[in-house]
Image 1 (cartoon, helix red, strand yellow):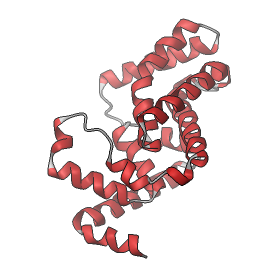
Image 2 (image 1 turned 90 degrees about the horizontal axis):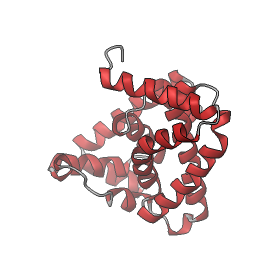
Image 3 (image 1 turned 30 degrees about the vertical axis):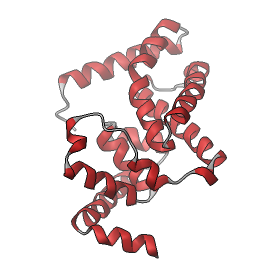
Length: 192
């Protein structure tokens, strides 16, 4: 990732600056930072919960936790990882509380289509492949490819060593590739 786009570097620098200011008690800096991250975090919460209203509720809880605990953020450069961790934990709490009503595979497939690529047959089959992956593999691929977290950010957000993240990403990509190339393989796994 040595050749990151300039706008991504600027965004990271702005996030870091505003996170540092927010840690020091600057409410406006926190509001601006949260406003910028609300959309990606809400989409992530939706992918995890499978319900728009649940995602909104999770985000309310997460926003309160972030505002209350921003002073505990040790490294302002790691705001995104920290925020995703909070949202992930709130989603896990929601899922545990509603486990009987949850069907992960059908909920993930019901994700709203937001762009033209989502309407293509390829995007649909990839989405279907993702829905057949175990939750941890789907989470890793979503955070890495859809939300754009780096390996280091994933390691921090998921509290795992970077080497473990890399090997699990590789395994998840291989699993998805197998499902994409042979869709009936995922159906066999479901029957086992």
